[in-house]
Image (cartoon, rainbow, N blue to C red; front, side, top):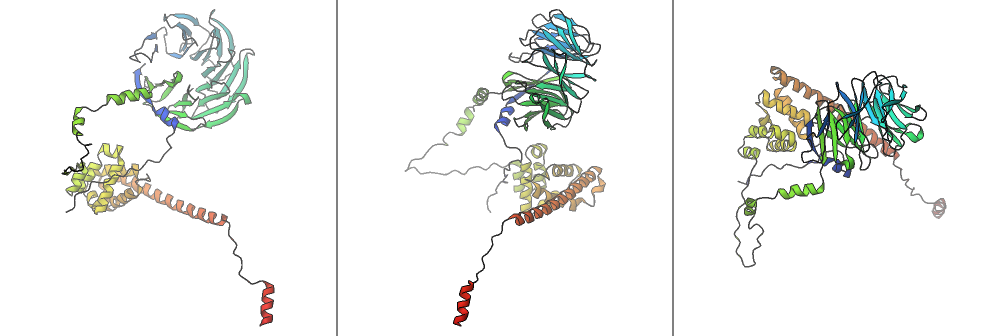
Length: 497
């Protein structure tokens, strides 16, 4: 009898986007989390999330904390309508600005460092003088809550605001009014200026819009890649890549052509986001009170981890003599290599086809390596025992099979063998599926998706036929010259006859 051959698992690459340099760049981030008064975190410490400084001078919720350019002062709004200015070294409130009648969600320093701008739910945007704590200006051109603010770093008199009235306004302190207005179309959650301050980004609803300020606020592109409201945005230091965060728990990274280059998954809906200089860390604040910080791994760190994973002496003993090259006069005695089989291969060798299929349908295998499960199904079909392996199953095992079919039956890599499995399952259990409500529901779903897939394939075949006809009609035809004798030659032949 021939020796048993293990099941051959074919590696089929998953269809998707090509792996680019940008994708590899953004994949090198390691996630750490901490639970978040105002806390300050220093990411370069040995314990990067040990809170080193916090402020508790607020009677109610604090909003919109922003640093000054030199990092020595911090300004923040609050639910009570007050704005407080803190000294980082002393944790003392140096100034308190009063004037807003409702909650202040956005605060920031202007680029000169001596003025603070704030946006409130009382529909006003105010500018304050830091040395004297006096209100310099009050702008009331919005008609709804102001929830977005971005000061210009190149011009100390310019700043941008976004409101729930669906508008984005650019204010100039010299004129005391807005000099540009853009209609976002949804309540604006965040506004962002690119470093060159030629482009402006606004987020609200499911849309991310980019505006050209040199062309009077002309809309350049409108992105709709999120499934829920986009709450925040930032720009990376390397390459000026745009990052957006949403309530759908995803952070998306866009390339220079505004195509999604990478995607980060988070544990909860995202409310705020910031990226460190040189893209060393990405901080994300979520609705569950968790601050997630991802640190980018460098090539040196990878080499260090690789060097730590050196194999011990047992591996050296195991491979001892493997690389020995015999001499020409040596007599070589071959030793049979022991064959190590997987669990499902051992069961297939013992003709336990049902147990082999159960092993291939274990939770880790069918979720992490569905190609192994499909390889076992193909091997059972080759042996002619697939129907026997699928027959006589209880509700739990049949539910696993149906869930696996519903998840992977439309994958082009697995569609052919899984369609065959679906047909066999329907033939075996169509008469008794009403005994279990769970199996009945899954079988009905399977029949529906198979019917839709069949209709879709038929429509695609019709489209393919139309395209073949169209391409055939567009192909230039080569005219075949008639093989007829010239008229003069014909007359001479007649006269000779």
